[in-house]
Image 1: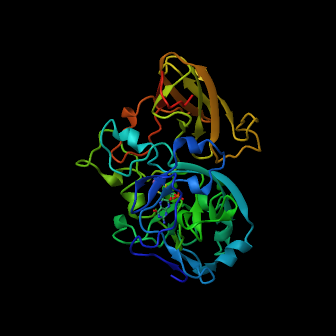
Image 2: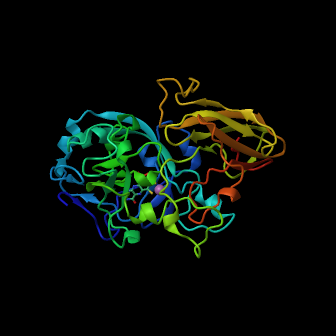
Image 3: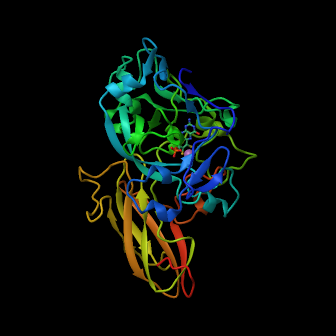
Length: 396
Ligand SMILES: Nc1nc2c(c(=O)[nH]1)N[C@H]1C(S)=C(S)[C@@H](COP(=O)(O)O)O[C@H]1N2
Ligand SMILES: [Mo]
C-alpha cells in the first residue's frame, strides 16, 4: 500500500514510556498503573494503554499514504490525507476501552484465554479527525443510510498490520452502515489524539474511533474501507470478542451462535487504591473512573466500605469542581466520569464501587456470574482490600 508498510518482525517498534506495565512484549500490550489514570481527565498519550496484535506499521511517505473505499457503492475511490483534512474537523472526547480490561481478575475464578490486563486497559482521549459520515458522502452515501442501493449494510475497516490470528493478514472489523452514516454517533477517522498528530502505537496516520463500543472495533492504521452486505468475517469479529455464558467451554463452543460484541456495558473501577492496601490512618480516598457504552451517561456511583452491605453515593465530575450531569449539553457524552468519596474505615475493610448508567443498568455483583472463556467484559463490582496498620506504603 502506498506510503504505509507492515514490518514482519518487531525491529521497528516505537519508543514507549517506562511507567507502562507490559502485559505482552510482542505484540506490544501495556497499561499504565491505575493511579496514573485518575491524575488527568484526558489521558496523556504516553499513559494510554497500547493494545496490538502484530508489529506496528511504518509510514514511509505520508504524502503518498492513501486508503481506498470499495464494495457495494457506485464507484470505488482513493482518499489521501489532504482529502480527510479538507473535511470539517471534529474533536470528540471519548473513552477507548479494551473488552479485555480487568481480565486478570476474571481469570482468578477460572482460567480464561487472552492477554492479562489489570484495570487500566482504558483511556479517555480527545480524538481529532473527520466524521466517517462525511467521508462516506464523498463516495455518494448520504447521511443516515442503513442500506446502499447495491445492498451494502456494513462498513468494514481493514488495516495493514500482520496478525497471527488472521494467519499473517491484517486486523479488521466492521460496524453497521446506519451507525457509520449517523453524524450523532461521532464515528471518526482520527488523525489526532489530544491535539497532537496520532502516534504510531495509536494508529498513525489514520485510525477509526467508534465511541461507546469496545476498543476492538476502532481499527488502527486504516488501509481500506469496504461496504459489504455482511458483517466482517474476520477473526476478531467472528472468533473473538464475543460474550459467551459461563457454561460454554473450549469443547462445546459454537462461535456462530453469538453476535460480535459492540457496545460495552457499564463499568467502574477504584484507581486510588491497589487490590490490597495497608494504610496508616482510617480515612481513605475512594476515587476512580466510571463509564458506560452506547453514549449512556453515568447516573450514579455507589461505594461501600463493608463489602457491599451498606452504601454511600460518590460525587461525580468530568471537569474538576463541576458536578457531572449527564443531561447537561456541556457533558462529554462518550467520555468517562471520575468519582470521589472519602470514608472512615474500620481496621480491616473491603471497599467496593459499582456504577449505574442512564438506562439504570448496574454492574453485576460477582465475576462468577459473568465468567466467560475469553475473559471479556469483566464489569463486576470493583473490590479492594484495605487494612489499617504500619507499613512504608500509605495509599490513604
Ligand atoms: N489495526 C489494528 N487495529 C486495532 C488493534 C490491532 O491490533 N490492530 N487492536 C484493537 C483493540 S483490541 C483495541 S482495545 C484498540 C486499542 O487501541 P490503542 O492501542 O490505541 O489503545 O485498538 C483496536 N484496533
Ligand atoms: Mo481490545
